[in-house]
Image (tube, rainbow, N blue to C red):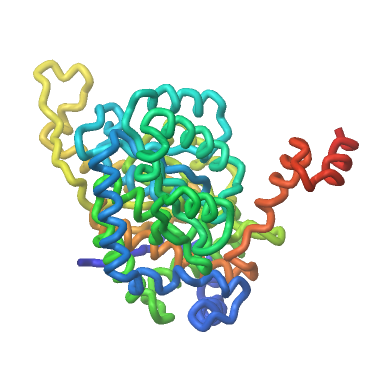
Length: 445
């Protein structure tokens, strides 16, 4: 199957000199990834993950998913950040756009999400939905003590045990956690939950191709073997440094634009199914590059919808932005625009055309307008939205992120800034062990 393609022609004219001069820097960054000599090299387990996942693991995940699909109307994925965004990105991209409005059918449960916020109404409304329903839980946490998922799991576990009984609940809870240590590992061992391991050398935002993402995706009924197959193909495509390597080209172009004053990257899609893929992408790049006072700010828009809100700013606002467009070549469904005898809306000139043809002309027209308006534009072409293509796209962005982060001069695999809010929150909540921090923060209030 054809690999995804990247086109940088409408970005090159904005930073040709910087792009031409950063080739050696990109190859040095590439080498750091491949030989593990860069900062954060203890978190490179994702690099060769697609080609090294054992068939036995895929079969085990599929078997677990089949059990949950058979016995549940709803499967709740409990996690935050990389522990849920990757799964949601893939599931949303592959699902019917209105899947949430259909009732679950036997053997085809709905996948829901919890622990990704601390919303009281959200939690209470989720409980209301699950009241009296058959549901299971996939709880995803390395430690088991992350506040948001810990709260959600405590509440949902109590509800499940109340409804199904403590013994039956054990077969409806699956823990994805550390192999040996942590609160969730301890609980899973005590209660007898089935478990899957989060590899020590894979960080959360790179974990979608581990059981963290594979199990919820399988529960939603999608083919994880094909997802891994696509990722493995991109792994092979991106194996060596070269001007033909799409990951290297993307990393070089975005760093060239950054050096030329473009501080914001907008990931654009013209297919609403890719909305949550952009959310996953934002975490991947924001957490990997936003440190040491550096980093391109990752933003995202859904076109043509957001052309009617953000389009004005993108066209004529501050020229610190560039766009990366995700373009899907072929929709899965064909729908043509009918003719109308009265033609009051004036669109009979479109009669007989596919809706996607109109969408593609909107995409092309927007690109021309934005480039003319001073916005560099890269385009990433995807054949279609299926497991194989999404696997390719996931690995493409992961590999490019590692190269880009090293080119930027940061450690792409840590996230020290994420801990700042947690320390303050724990101090304000007077968590045991934070007495000094509590005293200090209260003095600021």
